[in-house]
Image (cartoon, rainbow over all chains, first blue to last red):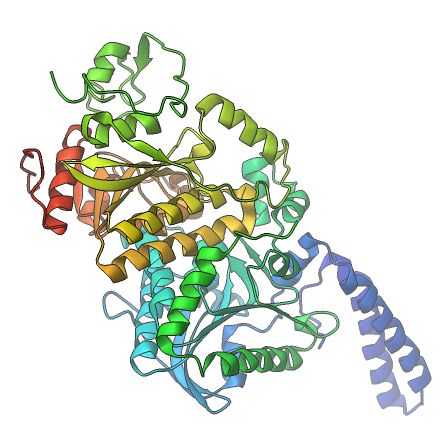
Length: 322
Length: 293
């Protein structure tokens, strides 16, 4: 999918140029009725070659850019495509509803589930509505409430992680952002139903793990999951804003790195050229992967499941590869 | 005379930390008052003029909490060092080596067993002097180990937090400590073993957003900074100055996040009361009343 208004990443310039040429030729062919399919085919091949070359060798910094690409499918896109009969549920029953934290019940490939996840928005208006994907304490308390509901009605939890981090603001602090995140992690670990989390774009630190202390943690190929953003890391450790590439290298936050460290369970392949080039295929791949893991988890007795989840985290990092 | 001034040195000398140069005078970071070291020791490192609580070295903290200042250190099994092979302007391994030299600690945590009011407890205390008390794999492992010992022996667990948050140099593995420590604490909760979280200056980031906020009882030291995001990050987000007292212990109490705010001299008595009541044991010592603020 190419969109004239979409953001162009610097390493994608050649790709986008070829894409534009192909579009132009297609238009011309349609208008003038000439057969230039050979030329189009030649360009298509060139495009694929270029995409393969670029995307096979993305640097961590480029991956961070792809992970934040505005055209990537976001939480609501996954919910819209993968969840049937979705019933959005609002509020933390305490203070407010946090629109950032999407939550509700529905059917995922025939299985009744609870869905939670952060939505970033796709244009200025919706980005403001969803607070740029940064949830507030009421969002994490809403997630907790829904996880409790999942536990009560024996519903598996599917979570979609896509946030730069929890919201750092005065009112968030006043309402206990730290406690809300801590308790949300705790609730993930307490429930007796399966929980499968997928990092679909940005896994931003505490705000991400709050809904991702899961039985299975999956990551899209070009998503990242990090303790800190490369920008913040650059400014803290290098005391400079122009060391983002170095910071991105050093932090080892790519999906492939996390698989290597045994932190996540699966890297889900994205279509050639990244999730933003074929949203439908990306969403399908994520759905297939979640289903595969859910099928493995559903037969496990609830108490065992909870014990295994606890042990998994207690053991994490104790046997790292060299 | 009190139990502080005539404390008995910890039993194991080998792990005793290197004392930072014995300066005769120290300046109060709050009011600027010059404070005589001997006086400071007597006042538990609380400014005699303005009451500001100076940051405590972790071994001093442990001595203040355990009966007669006696405790036995618990070794933390080492995990892989520098898993990311992290390097910024300096290698992470070099930073570690420097901090080990200056603090005498292996990493930013000490775990110790001993009696508090006659009740055997395990204390896991974070060492702010070691890389800002940042939580990486070693700190996480310390909390997990401490909780495991408590789980096996039915001892109450006490954590003392003083941390800027997660340790960036260990990347995602430091983030995972939030889930690891929470999982460890949760096991205690399932068994009905008390977990008391003491929050001291400062407790922010990944530490406040995991085990530190999950105490059955959260006790904060007077005036300490507690929050998720650091004040500078918030100021950058909202682009205005933060109000006085924001994110201080008293503010957290007002907002329902901590149970008790105490001065340093009230800390031990408060702890003894809480533990003894939760474990149905009569404490070996008399405790002072806690004021209902």
